[in-house]
Length: 215
Image 1 (spheres, rainbow, N blue to C red):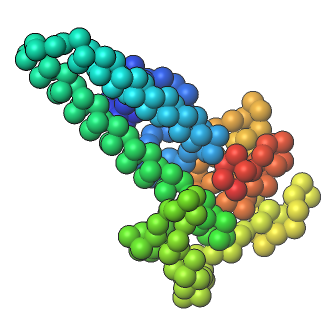
Image 2: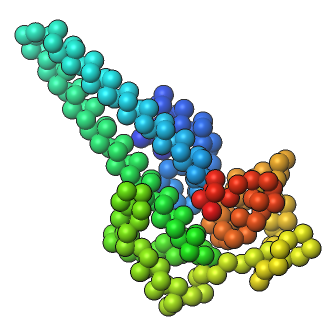
Image 3: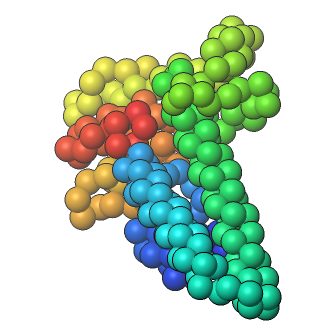
C-alpha cells in the first residue's frame, strides 16, 4: 500500500501519489523530494485539512438538527473525535516532513558529501524547527566539520565541458539525468544524496534551477 494512501485515505492518497510519482514516498529516507514537489504535497495536505474543517462544520449543523436523537448524537460525537484525531495526525506528519526537508537542505548547504551519513551523526532530538528556522544544528555541524572533515567539501566537475573542480564527473553520470530526454529520477536522487555540488552543476547545465531541489 502506498504510504500516501495509508496516511491520507484512498482517494486523496492516490491524488498525492500521482503528483509525486511512484519514486517518491514520504518517510522513506532514500528518496529525495524536491522543493516544488514538497510544496505540492504541502498544499494538498492543506486542502485536506480544510476538508476536515468543513466536515466539522457540517457535523455541527447536523448536531443542531439531531435534537434528542441519542443514537445520532452519539454517532456525531464519534465522527468529531475521528476528525480531530485525523487532523492531529496530519499536522504531526506535515511537521515531521518539513523538519526533514529543512534539515537535509541545511546539511547539503553545509557541503556534506553524503548527507545521509552526516544526518546519522546528528542528535536530531536537540534540533528544532521554529518559524521556518532550525535551531540546535549549527554547533553540531561545526563540530562535525572539524572532527569529521572528510564528510564535507564539495567535489566539483572538471573537464572541457565543466568548470574547474577537485574531481571529475563519474562515468555513470556522463548522461546528465536532468537533461530533457535523459531524465532519470533514480540517478537524480543518487547524485543529490551523494554529491550536491555535482547535482547543482548538472541541473544548471540542463537549464534547470538548483533551488527547486533545495540547493
